[in-house]
Image (cartoon, rainbow, N blue to C red; front, side, top):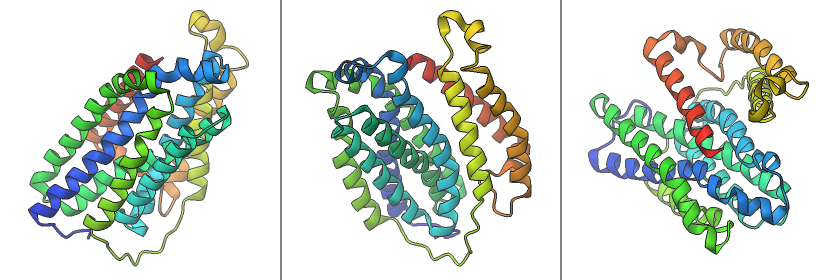
Amino acid sequence: MEGKTLDKKTRNLILFLFLIGVFMGSLDTGIIGPVLPSIEQSFHLTSRESSWIFTLFVISFMIGSPVMAKFSDFYGRKKIFIFDVILFGIGSCLIASSISIEAIFLGRIVQGFGCGGIFPVAGAFIGDGFPLEERGKALGILGSVFGISAIGGPLVGAALIPYGWNWCFTINIPIAIFIILFAWYILPSAENDRKLKIDYLGIIVLSLLAVFLSYGLNQIDSSNFLSSLLSIKVLPYLLMFIILIPIFLRIERRAEESIVPIHMLKNREISIACVETLCYGIIYSSAIF
């Protein structure tokens, strides 16, 4: 499908499909905020412990985004997009039916990994099959839906609290099934002769970066910021994160099939977009917690 422009009807159906997928994924990033107190009460958790429900999702999302995007280059957008939605649905099932906090943690990891792939694969699909003059508009629509559903997530979560926190994740299951069936029917397949060369070392170091940064930030006590920042629970992990950054950049520059295309950061517009995304993530996460 890469390099072949699709007809207008097919493009509209595909865009509609991706809008549903992005809506489902981004809705779940914000829906957790209002239901955290209910989950804490159900499993007798402290606020520090329950924050891992969000943090684990973010970690796996950070890892899943570049990994799934790269895999889609080799296995095809359709297969990986459907696989991502399946992962998200499985994660939702695990959480909705969980009887322990460990099951919720596992479900959020699976959810985050699948959700992390939905966004970049959808964007890559648009880049492959949409004419140049329509790509910006399509990506803009996806971005607006992401923003709307991220705002709507807490509202939906608050509305579902009277019915039980499980319903915040149960509603994802029929949506995921619909997306899978619709994607199987409407998304064009593409054969790929490229041999997959997985950047295992890059994936490992990227995972460590995500874990060290997320764990370190999660252990900071906002009421005693400076002391906690310099404590043994925080400082070593943040230092490891800083140390691994140049190592990761070096690995990716040398990798034949890098998991993160570092060279693209030389593009001023892409660099600005990355900074803006970082700022959005900080503000959005702060609003939840």
